[in-house]
Image (tube, rainbow, N blue to C red; front, side, top):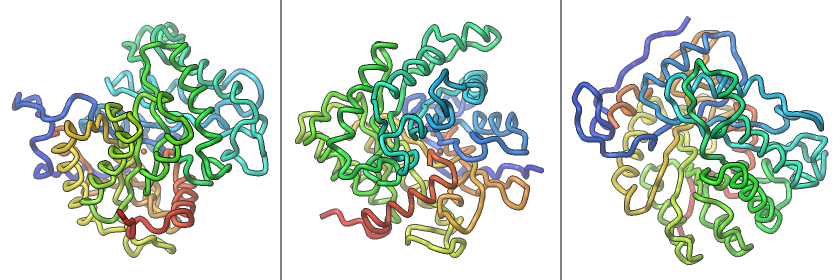
Length: 382
Protein backbone atom coordinates (compact mmCIF):
# COMPACT_ATOMS: atom_id res chain seq x y z
CA UNK A 1 0.00 0.00 0.00
CA UNK A 2 1.48 3.35 -1.04
CA UNK A 3 1.60 6.14 1.48
CA UNK A 4 0.87 9.69 0.46
CA UNK A 5 3.48 12.02 -1.03
CA UNK A 6 5.00 14.48 1.41
CA UNK A 7 5.07 17.84 -0.37
CA UNK A 8 7.91 20.30 0.20
CA UNK A 9 6.57 23.59 -1.04
CA UNK A 10 9.46 25.51 0.47
CA UNK A 11 12.04 23.88 -1.81
CA UNK A 12 13.09 25.81 -4.90
CA UNK A 13 9.75 27.46 -5.49
CA UNK A 14 11.18 29.67 -8.22
CA UNK A 15 12.84 27.15 -10.54
CA UNK A 16 9.92 26.10 -12.76
CA UNK A 17 6.68 27.99 -12.60
CA UNK A 18 3.57 26.10 -11.55
CA UNK A 19 0.86 26.47 -14.17
CA UNK A 20 -1.66 28.03 -11.79
CA UNK A 21 0.70 30.90 -11.07
CA UNK A 22 1.83 31.34 -14.68
CA UNK A 23 5.11 32.59 -13.25
CA UNK A 24 8.31 32.77 -15.22
CA UNK A 25 10.36 29.58 -15.54
CA UNK A 26 14.00 29.94 -14.58
CA UNK A 27 15.11 26.68 -16.16
CA UNK A 28 14.16 25.33 -19.60
CA UNK A 29 11.66 22.55 -20.05
CA UNK A 30 13.26 19.17 -19.51
CA UNK A 31 16.17 20.56 -17.48
CA UNK A 32 15.34 18.59 -14.35
CA UNK A 33 14.56 14.89 -14.43
CA UNK A 34 14.95 11.65 -12.48
CA UNK A 35 16.64 8.30 -12.90
CA UNK A 36 14.06 5.54 -12.72
CA UNK A 37 15.93 2.25 -12.61
CA UNK A 38 15.63 -0.40 -9.95
CA UNK A 39 12.11 -1.64 -9.17
CA UNK A 40 10.36 0.50 -11.79
CA UNK A 41 12.61 -0.90 -14.52
CA UNK A 42 12.80 -4.45 -13.24
CA UNK A 43 9.16 -4.92 -12.36
CA UNK A 44 7.73 -5.11 -8.85
CA UNK A 45 4.51 -6.13 -7.19
CA UNK A 46 3.34 -2.54 -6.73
CA UNK A 47 1.22 -0.50 -9.14
CA UNK A 48 3.62 0.68 -11.84
CA UNK A 49 1.00 2.98 -13.40
CA UNK A 50 0.65 4.78 -10.08
CA UNK A 51 4.40 5.31 -9.90
CA UNK A 52 4.51 6.68 -13.44
CA UNK A 53 1.59 9.00 -12.65
CA UNK A 54 3.37 10.25 -9.54
CA UNK A 55 6.65 10.68 -11.37
CA UNK A 56 5.02 12.76 -14.08
CA UNK A 57 2.88 14.60 -11.54
CA UNK A 58 5.96 15.57 -9.56
CA UNK A 59 6.99 17.75 -12.47
CA UNK A 60 9.80 15.52 -13.75
CA UNK A 61 10.01 16.26 -17.47
CA UNK A 62 12.68 13.72 -18.41
CA UNK A 63 13.39 10.20 -17.16
CA UNK A 64 16.67 8.28 -17.47
CA UNK A 65 16.55 4.48 -17.50
CA UNK A 66 19.16 1.82 -18.24
CA UNK A 67 18.74 -0.24 -21.40
CA UNK A 68 20.99 -3.17 -20.49
CA UNK A 69 22.24 -4.85 -23.63
CA UNK A 70 22.79 -8.13 -21.76
CA UNK A 71 19.08 -8.29 -20.88
CA UNK A 72 17.63 -7.01 -24.14
CA UNK A 73 19.77 -9.20 -26.41
CA UNK A 74 20.85 -12.16 -24.26
CA UNK A 75 21.66 -14.27 -27.32
CA UNK A 76 22.97 -13.39 -30.76
CA UNK A 77 19.60 -12.74 -32.33
CA UNK A 78 16.93 -10.04 -32.56
CA UNK A 79 16.63 -7.87 -29.42
CA UNK A 80 13.77 -8.64 -27.04
CA UNK A 81 12.21 -5.23 -26.42
CA UNK A 82 8.84 -5.93 -24.82
CA UNK A 83 9.83 -4.53 -21.44
CA UNK A 84 11.45 -1.40 -22.84
CA UNK A 85 8.44 -0.89 -25.13
CA UNK A 86 6.30 -0.65 -22.01
CA UNK A 87 8.63 1.83 -20.33
CA UNK A 88 8.89 4.11 -23.35
CA UNK A 89 5.11 4.06 -23.86
CA UNK A 90 4.49 4.75 -20.15
CA UNK A 91 6.70 7.83 -20.32
CA UNK A 92 5.35 9.05 -23.66
CA UNK A 93 1.72 8.71 -22.62
CA UNK A 94 2.48 11.13 -19.78
CA UNK A 95 4.52 13.57 -21.85
CA UNK A 96 7.80 12.63 -20.15
CA UNK A 97 10.88 12.53 -22.37
CA UNK A 98 13.19 9.54 -22.19
CA UNK A 99 16.98 9.18 -21.95
CA UNK A 100 18.20 5.57 -22.23
CA UNK A 101 21.67 4.73 -20.96
CA UNK A 102 22.74 1.78 -23.11
CA UNK A 103 25.36 -0.49 -21.54
CA UNK A 104 26.24 -3.95 -20.13
CA UNK A 105 27.72 -6.48 -22.57
CA UNK A 106 26.00 -9.87 -22.99
CA UNK A 107 28.21 -12.94 -22.62
CA UNK A 108 27.94 -13.88 -26.30
CA UNK A 109 29.37 -10.51 -27.37
CA UNK A 110 32.01 -10.05 -24.64
CA UNK A 111 35.70 -9.85 -25.40
CA UNK A 112 36.33 -11.44 -22.02
CA UNK A 113 33.20 -13.23 -20.76
CA UNK A 114 34.86 -13.82 -17.38
CA UNK A 115 34.58 -10.08 -16.76
CA UNK A 116 30.81 -10.23 -17.10
CA UNK A 117 28.85 -7.30 -18.47
CA UNK A 118 31.79 -4.95 -17.81
CA UNK A 119 33.79 -6.55 -20.59
CA UNK A 120 34.13 -4.44 -23.73
CA UNK A 121 32.46 -6.14 -26.69
CA UNK A 122 34.64 -8.35 -28.86
CA UNK A 123 33.26 -6.58 -31.93
CA UNK A 124 32.03 -3.01 -31.59
CA UNK A 125 29.80 -3.68 -34.60
CA UNK A 126 27.64 -5.96 -32.42
CA UNK A 127 26.88 -3.01 -30.16
CA UNK A 128 26.33 -0.51 -32.94
CA UNK A 129 23.88 -2.91 -34.61
CA UNK A 130 21.99 -3.08 -31.30
CA UNK A 131 21.98 0.72 -31.09
CA UNK A 132 20.56 1.03 -34.59
CA UNK A 133 17.79 -1.40 -33.68
CA UNK A 134 16.90 0.76 -30.66
CA UNK A 135 16.85 4.00 -32.67
CA UNK A 136 14.76 2.37 -35.38
CA UNK A 137 12.32 1.20 -32.72
CA UNK A 138 12.07 4.29 -30.51
CA UNK A 139 13.37 7.20 -32.61
CA UNK A 140 11.46 9.39 -35.07
CA UNK A 141 9.24 7.26 -37.28
CA UNK A 142 10.13 4.25 -35.16
CA UNK A 143 8.19 1.03 -35.38
CA UNK A 144 6.92 1.40 -31.80
CA UNK A 145 4.99 4.55 -32.72
CA UNK A 146 3.53 2.95 -35.83
CA UNK A 147 2.32 -0.01 -33.77
CA UNK A 148 0.78 2.20 -31.07
CA UNK A 149 -1.10 5.06 -32.73
CA UNK A 150 -3.16 5.44 -29.54
CA UNK A 151 -0.09 6.98 -27.85
CA UNK A 152 1.08 10.36 -29.02
CA UNK A 153 4.59 9.73 -30.35
CA UNK A 154 7.39 11.17 -28.23
CA UNK A 155 10.48 9.80 -30.00
CA UNK A 156 13.73 9.32 -28.12
CA UNK A 157 16.18 11.93 -29.39
CA UNK A 158 19.04 11.51 -26.90
CA UNK A 159 21.06 8.34 -26.22
CA UNK A 160 23.64 7.89 -23.49
CA UNK A 161 26.41 5.46 -24.40
CA UNK A 162 27.56 3.30 -21.49
CA UNK A 163 27.91 4.11 -17.81
CA UNK A 164 30.95 5.14 -15.76
CA UNK A 165 33.66 3.56 -17.94
CA UNK A 166 36.30 4.99 -15.60
CA UNK A 167 35.23 2.25 -13.15
CA UNK A 168 36.40 -1.31 -13.69
CA UNK A 169 32.94 -2.47 -12.58
CA UNK A 170 31.50 -1.04 -15.81
CA UNK A 171 34.44 -1.16 -18.27
CA UNK A 172 36.86 -3.89 -17.32
CA UNK A 173 39.78 -2.70 -19.45
CA UNK A 174 41.58 -0.03 -17.44
CA UNK A 175 42.90 2.54 -18.03
CA UNK A 176 39.74 2.95 -20.05
CA UNK A 177 40.29 5.78 -22.52
CA UNK A 178 42.33 4.07 -25.25
CA UNK A 179 39.77 1.29 -25.71
CA UNK A 180 36.66 3.32 -24.93
CA UNK A 181 37.18 6.22 -27.35
CA UNK A 182 36.96 4.13 -30.56
CA UNK A 183 33.89 2.41 -29.11
CA UNK A 184 32.32 5.78 -28.29
CA UNK A 185 33.08 7.17 -31.73
CA UNK A 186 31.59 4.18 -33.51
CA UNK A 187 28.47 4.48 -31.34
CA UNK A 188 28.19 8.19 -32.12
CA UNK A 189 28.30 7.49 -35.84
CA UNK A 190 25.78 4.66 -35.59
CA UNK A 191 23.21 6.78 -33.73
CA UNK A 192 23.61 9.75 -36.09
CA UNK A 193 23.29 7.58 -39.16
CA UNK A 194 19.98 6.30 -37.81
CA UNK A 195 18.80 9.75 -36.63
CA UNK A 196 20.95 12.64 -37.79
CA UNK A 197 19.36 15.04 -35.30
CA UNK A 198 19.77 12.80 -32.25
CA UNK A 199 22.07 13.78 -29.39
CA UNK A 200 24.68 11.30 -28.22
CA UNK A 201 25.59 11.69 -24.56
CA UNK A 202 28.95 10.58 -23.22
CA UNK A 203 28.94 7.92 -20.51
CA UNK A 204 28.70 9.52 -17.08
CA UNK A 205 32.04 10.15 -15.38
CA UNK A 206 31.88 9.83 -11.60
CA UNK A 207 33.74 11.46 -8.72
CA UNK A 208 37.11 12.67 -10.10
CA UNK A 209 35.39 13.14 -13.41
CA UNK A 210 37.78 15.73 -14.77
CA UNK A 211 40.66 13.22 -14.71
CA UNK A 212 38.59 10.76 -16.74
CA UNK A 213 37.69 13.51 -19.19
CA UNK A 214 41.33 14.54 -19.54
CA UNK A 215 42.28 10.97 -20.41
CA UNK A 216 39.41 10.69 -22.85
CA UNK A 217 40.37 13.87 -24.70
CA UNK A 218 44.04 12.82 -24.72
CA UNK A 219 42.94 9.60 -26.43
CA UNK A 220 41.20 11.56 -29.19
CA UNK A 221 37.68 11.62 -27.77
CA UNK A 222 36.71 15.11 -28.90
CA UNK A 223 33.89 14.97 -31.45
CA UNK A 224 32.58 11.56 -30.36
CA UNK A 225 29.66 12.93 -28.30
CA UNK A 226 27.23 15.83 -28.24
CA UNK A 227 27.27 16.34 -24.47
CA UNK A 228 29.56 15.41 -21.58
CA UNK A 229 27.92 13.62 -18.64
CA UNK A 230 29.01 13.85 -15.01
CA UNK A 231 28.05 11.96 -11.85
CA UNK A 232 29.30 14.36 -9.16
CA UNK A 233 28.94 12.23 -6.03
CA UNK A 234 30.16 14.17 -3.02
CA UNK A 235 29.19 14.81 0.59
CA UNK A 236 29.22 18.59 0.19
CA UNK A 237 26.72 20.27 -2.18
CA UNK A 238 29.22 23.09 -2.67
CA UNK A 239 31.47 20.61 -4.45
CA UNK A 240 28.89 19.96 -7.18
CA UNK A 241 29.58 23.22 -9.00
CA UNK A 242 33.31 22.84 -8.30
CA UNK A 243 33.27 19.47 -10.05
CA UNK A 244 31.40 20.96 -13.02
CA UNK A 245 33.92 23.80 -13.21
CA UNK A 246 36.83 21.34 -13.16
CA UNK A 247 35.25 19.40 -16.01
CA UNK A 248 34.51 22.57 -17.97
CA UNK A 249 38.15 23.69 -17.61
CA UNK A 250 39.35 20.37 -19.07
CA UNK A 251 36.86 20.72 -21.92
CA UNK A 252 38.10 24.21 -22.74
CA UNK A 253 41.70 23.03 -22.72
CA UNK A 254 40.65 20.38 -25.25
CA UNK A 255 38.97 23.07 -27.43
CA UNK A 256 35.56 21.61 -26.60
CA UNK A 257 34.29 24.38 -24.37
CA UNK A 258 30.96 24.83 -26.15
CA UNK A 259 29.78 21.26 -25.63
CA UNK A 260 27.03 21.12 -22.98
CA UNK A 261 27.27 19.22 -19.72
CA UNK A 262 24.56 16.86 -18.50
CA UNK A 263 24.53 15.72 -14.88
CA UNK A 264 22.97 12.32 -15.36
CA UNK A 265 23.24 11.21 -11.73
CA UNK A 266 23.02 13.50 -8.71
CA UNK A 267 22.41 11.91 -5.34
CA UNK A 268 22.66 12.36 -1.59
CA UNK A 269 21.52 9.04 -0.12
CA UNK A 270 19.65 9.26 3.19
CA UNK A 271 21.65 6.23 4.36
CA UNK A 272 23.48 7.51 7.43
CA UNK A 273 23.59 4.71 10.02
CA UNK A 274 21.60 2.40 7.71
CA UNK A 275 24.24 0.56 5.67
CA UNK A 276 26.93 -1.91 6.65
CA UNK A 277 29.74 -0.32 4.65
CA UNK A 278 29.28 3.47 4.44
CA UNK A 279 31.56 5.58 2.28
CA UNK A 280 31.23 8.85 4.17
CA UNK A 281 28.86 10.77 1.89
CA UNK A 282 25.67 9.39 3.43
CA UNK A 283 23.31 11.81 5.14
CA UNK A 284 20.10 11.88 7.12
CA UNK A 285 16.62 12.36 5.70
CA UNK A 286 16.66 16.06 6.58
CA UNK A 287 20.20 16.29 5.24
CA UNK A 288 19.05 14.87 1.92
CA UNK A 289 16.43 17.61 1.67
CA UNK A 290 18.93 20.35 2.49
CA UNK A 291 21.59 19.02 0.12
CA UNK A 292 19.13 18.54 -2.72
CA UNK A 293 17.87 22.07 -2.22
CA UNK A 294 21.37 23.57 -2.13
CA UNK A 295 22.73 21.65 -5.11
CA UNK A 296 19.78 22.35 -7.41
CA UNK A 297 19.80 26.02 -6.51
CA UNK A 298 23.50 26.36 -7.24
CA UNK A 299 23.24 24.43 -10.50
CA UNK A 300 20.27 26.48 -11.65
CA UNK A 301 22.19 29.65 -10.86
CA UNK A 302 25.25 28.51 -12.80
CA UNK A 303 23.55 26.63 -15.63
CA UNK A 304 24.02 29.32 -18.30
CA UNK A 305 27.59 30.17 -17.37
CA UNK A 306 28.68 26.52 -17.25
CA UNK A 307 26.22 25.31 -19.93
CA UNK A 308 24.61 22.70 -17.70
CA UNK A 309 21.91 21.41 -20.01
CA UNK A 310 20.26 18.65 -17.91
CA UNK A 311 20.20 17.44 -14.30
CA UNK A 312 18.86 14.04 -13.16
CA UNK A 313 18.27 13.04 -9.54
CA UNK A 314 19.23 9.46 -8.74
CA UNK A 315 16.73 7.94 -8.18
CA UNK A 316 12.93 7.83 -8.28
CA UNK A 317 12.26 4.43 -6.67
CA UNK A 318 14.76 2.22 -4.79
CA UNK A 319 14.59 -0.75 -2.44
CA UNK A 320 16.00 -0.01 1.01
CA UNK A 321 18.72 -2.42 2.15
CA UNK A 322 21.93 -2.42 4.16
CA UNK A 323 24.27 -3.32 1.30
CA UNK A 324 24.14 -0.14 -0.79
CA UNK A 325 24.00 3.50 0.17
CA UNK A 326 22.26 4.23 -3.12
CA UNK A 327 19.34 2.06 -2.06
CA UNK A 328 18.45 4.98 0.23
CA UNK A 329 18.61 7.59 -2.53
CA UNK A 330 15.08 7.07 -3.84
CA UNK A 331 12.47 9.77 -3.60
CA UNK A 332 10.17 6.79 -3.25
CA UNK A 333 11.36 3.61 -1.52
CA UNK A 334 10.25 0.04 -1.08
CA UNK A 335 10.31 -0.80 2.62
CA UNK A 336 8.99 -4.08 4.01
CA UNK A 337 6.60 -4.54 1.12
CA UNK A 338 5.24 -0.98 1.18
CA UNK A 339 6.20 2.11 -0.78
CA UNK A 340 7.07 5.17 1.27
CA UNK A 341 7.93 8.68 0.12
CA UNK A 342 11.11 10.44 1.09
CA UNK A 343 10.59 13.93 2.49
CA UNK A 344 12.84 15.05 -0.36
CA UNK A 345 10.27 13.96 -2.94
CA UNK A 346 10.17 16.98 -5.23
CA UNK A 347 6.49 17.46 -5.84
CA UNK A 348 7.30 21.12 -5.41
CA UNK A 349 11.00 21.05 -6.27
CA UNK A 350 10.30 19.90 -9.80
CA UNK A 351 7.05 21.72 -10.43
CA UNK A 352 8.46 24.86 -8.97
CA UNK A 353 11.53 24.70 -10.78
CA UNK A 354 17.91 6.82 -11.75
CA UNK A 355 22.78 2.93 -10.99
CA UNK A 356 21.36 3.30 -13.84
CA UNK A 357 21.90 -0.08 -12.93
CA UNK A 358 19.55 -0.91 -10.10
CA UNK A 359 20.48 -1.73 -6.52
CA UNK A 360 22.97 -4.46 -7.36
CA UNK A 361 24.79 -2.36 -9.94
CA UNK A 362 24.81 0.62 -7.60
CA UNK A 363 26.47 -1.48 -4.94
CA UNK A 364 29.19 -2.62 -7.34
CA UNK A 365 29.58 0.93 -8.57
CA UNK A 366 30.05 2.16 -5.01
CA UNK A 367 32.71 -0.46 -4.32
CA UNK A 368 34.55 0.36 -7.54
CA UNK A 369 34.17 4.04 -6.75
CA UNK A 370 35.96 3.64 -3.43
CA UNK A 371 38.67 1.35 -4.83
CA UNK A 372 39.45 3.61 -7.75
CA UNK A 373 39.23 7.09 -6.29
CA UNK A 374 38.51 6.97 -2.60
CA UNK A 375 35.34 7.93 -0.81
CA UNK A 376 33.01 10.60 -2.23
CA UNK A 377 33.29 12.51 1.03
CA UNK A 378 37.00 13.05 0.53
CA UNK A 379 37.26 14.24 -3.08
CA UNK A 380 40.31 16.45 -3.49
CA UNK A 381 40.08 19.36 -5.87
CA UNK A 382 43.83 19.85 -6.20
